[in-house]
Length: 214
Ligand SMILES: *Cc1c(COP(=O)(O)O)cnc(C)c1O
Image (cartoon, rainbow, N blue to C red; front, side, top):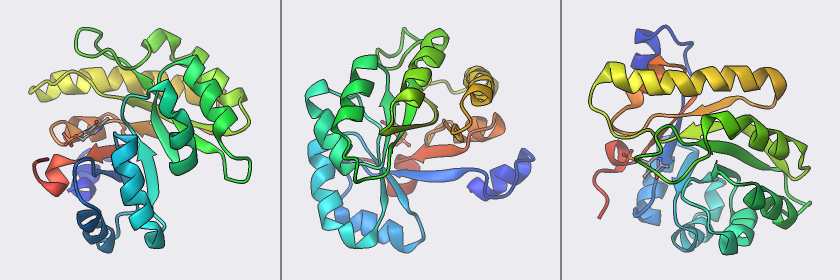
């Protein structure tokens, strides 16, 4: 599916990576998915994820934290995850940097941008993304990888494309300043076609992959 959309929108082959969003799905389903070659999984809840990460440690998967970050959970995020895609406050960046063990590789970070304030409280404004990105870039135990956003639900493909295009523009601009940025994380089960059309390099798919969450 992703490969055919890459072709449809003249994107290079394999330029879009799949992040399998496994929240509220079992370790057994993740193991099954990993057998098909999926290496990256996204989780929204620290407690729920920790059990699965421990159970699947033999598979050497990459774990992405994609849910709202509570400041009292940053230590467990810094210890258990490889990526955090939902960073939207300075204070959380400082805490994650301090709590990331120097024995591990830097924690990969995407700054979460809020494309529609009416729909969501999470994410920083597009105008403030660069300032937060610069902070992440300056902290030694964090590595700035890109931007992530969850636009308001929208059925129309052209309107979906419009908000993804805004994020993409800021991504290309910031990438000139911060060369470690290689990840434009946008597109979920209902809008990944529009996201791929607008330059997404990582789609976060839950329902379309694992079925409905229980
Ligand atoms: C749950 C979630 C997804 C996946 O959503 P689906 O519609 O099931 O594909 C993607 N990104 C984030 C941040 C999520 O919380």
